[in-house]
Amino acid sequence: MSEDVLSQNEIDALLSALSTGEMSAEELQKEQNESNKKVRVYDFKRALRFSKDQIRGITRIHENFARILTTYLSSQLRTYVSNTVASVEQVPYEEFIRSIPKQTLLNVYSIPPLEGRILLEVNPNIAYATFDRLLGGVGSSLNKVDNLTEIETKLMTKVFSRIIESLREAWESLVDIDPVLEEFEVNKQFLQLVSPNETVVVISLNTTIGETSGVMNICIPHMVLEPLISKLSVHYWMQNQSNSSNPEDYEKMSKHLMGTKVEVRAILGESTISIEDLLHLEENDVIQLNQRIDQPMTLNVHDQEKFHVQLGRKNKKLAVQVIDEIRGEDHNE
Image 1 (cartoon, rainbow, N blue to C red):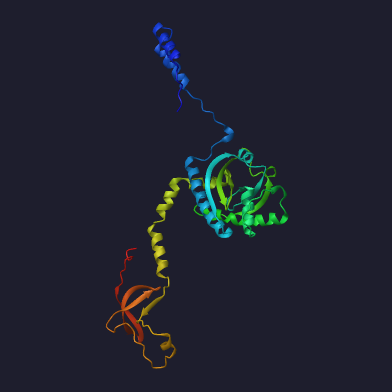
Image 2: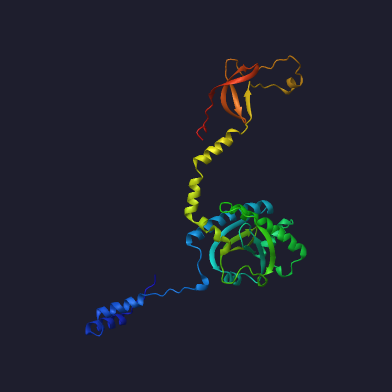
């Protein structure tokens, strides 16, 4: 916090005024209080419609989106990919449009069942690096959005249709959406998503693909998120976390697991023979096992030793009886 520092001459003049009676201590205190009053300017055109808590909720969701998108692009492009949330801000739509380049890649999506549309703005360098890798190139960046060919436009719309699928997964904790690419534009002058004064949330992602870096911006109008406002608070997240350990859910999950089929094998014993002996095996030949008749056998569940058992019969069929459980080092886990 900055404070005004008086010079020595100003201090001497102030002391002189107090000593001669030109200014009383009460008047000095009143003048100081008036000078400390600060006027806070509020711009009604830039109304803040999201609380800090809600902004943190939006940030948390899109940090997850950045991780999912990184995994998806890395597998598709076979190169180094990084996506991180740089900032999350609420601004008027007009201010956001002015902040992006005149020529850029603008993708407009509808996200039913929510009303309204969202916008994904992608730096051309990032888009062309992605495009180049998908076509077998090294991932070179190029910025020529002003003269995209019909083939380039078609292929890029397919790329951005698949990229937005990662947003569906990131939003699952809030709502199940079905994003659909409705418009692909390169000139922001031809795009009108909402009214100029409408508050939008802008999530900026720092993106790196190979040697190319750039920014992707997700613009979400307030009207889209309005039905989900109550789900963006920390209280909602904590409530969901506590509900995840609901005894009813645990019982339901246990019931499903009880019906799961597993592979079980009783091992009578093992033996090692040579290839030559194996090739010359004939009917009635005897193979000696390493298992003694008075020793318990091992019961394997999915190739893991779980129980000691003994051989027997039940209803004229071969069966085993469990004697005890095999407790290994990770039994407690």
